[in-house]
Image (cartoon, rainbow, N blue to C red):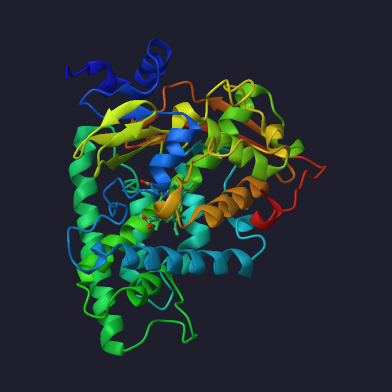
Length: 394
Ligand code: HEM
C-alpha cells in the first residue's frame, strides 16, 4: 500500500476526497478498509457474527486485571453512575463557573476548565489528597494534559505531568485501600476514583487503576467541553441564535458535524465481506463516523448546522458519535447531559459572539476544535432554557 502523506497532514480532507473519488468502501493509507454507510457501520460495530477481535483499548490496559472486557464495562458503568449523580444532585452545576467566566474567554480551553470545575468534587472527593486535586487542576489549566499538544516541544512536559498524576493517583488508591474505605462515608462510590477502584478486582495494580482513572478523567472533561465549543462555533458561523433553539439539539447537531471520535477501527477475526469488499483476519476495518454523519443521502443539507433536524426521527445507524454495539460509549447519555447543561448555562441571559476559530480543527486521534474567543455579554431578557433530560430525547 502506498503511504499518502495527505492523510497524515489532513486526515479529514483525505477521507472527504477519497469518498468523493471512489466507490465506498475505500482503503486508507496503510490498507484499512474504510466504511461510511449506516448498514456497514452498524454491522461492524455491533458485530453480531463475532467477526472482529474484541476491543479493550479504551481504558488502555496493557494486559493486567483491567484487560477483561467485563471489568472495563463495569468500570464504565460505575463511572457513569458517579457523573450522573453529580448531574442530578445539582440542577445548575455550571451557574457559578459561567458567572465567573468573564466576558471574553478563549475556547475550547475555557470549556475544559468549566467542565473540570463543575465535576472536580466528583472526579476526586474533597477529602482526598489536596496534592492530587491540585495536580488534576494543573493538568487542565496549565498544560492541557487532557489533549495531546500539536507542538512537539510541549509534549515532554505534558508526559512528565501525566506520569506524575498517575503516580499520585496510584498512591491515593493505596491510601484508600489501607483505610479500607473510600471518602464520603456513603454506601456507593463518592467519586470517580472509587468508582474505578471498586469496579476492579481487589488485587488490581494501583497504577493500572490510575491509568484507567486518568483516561476517564480526560474523557469526562475534554470531549464534553469540545462538543460545546463546536456548538458555539457552528451556531455563530450558521447565524443560529443558540438562545432560540433547544440546547440538547444544538449539542447533538454539533456532534453530528464534528464527532469527537471520528474513526473507529476494528481488527478482523474471521474472513467476510463488508460493503461488498472482502476482508481477511488481521486486516483493519475503519468506520468513518465523520463521513457517515455528512452523507447527503441520509442528512438533508448535511454540512449545515441545523439543530431543528433533531425534532424529527433520524435514520437508524446514521448517527454514531458514541459508537454502537457491545463497546459503545458507556458515558453517552451523561456526556450529552453535561454538555447540554453547560450550553444552557452559557446561553442563559447572555448574548454570545464568537471571534476567530477559522483555523482547521486538529485531528490527533480525536478531533479538537480550533481556538476562538467567546464574548459573552449579559442581556436583560433571560433566554434561559430548561435542561432537557436525556429521557425526553430520542
Ligand atoms: C462527548 C463525550 C464523549 C464521546 C464523544 C465519547 C465517545 C466514545 C466512543 C466513540 C466510544 C467507543 C469507541 C469504539 O467503539 O471504539 C467510547 C467508549 C467509551 N466511553 Fe465515551 N465518549 C464520551 C464521553 C464519555 C464519558 C463522560 C465517559 C464516562 C463514563 C465515557 C466512557 C466511555 C467508556 C468506559 C468507553 C468504553 C466502553 C467499552 O469499551 O466497554 N465516555 N466513547
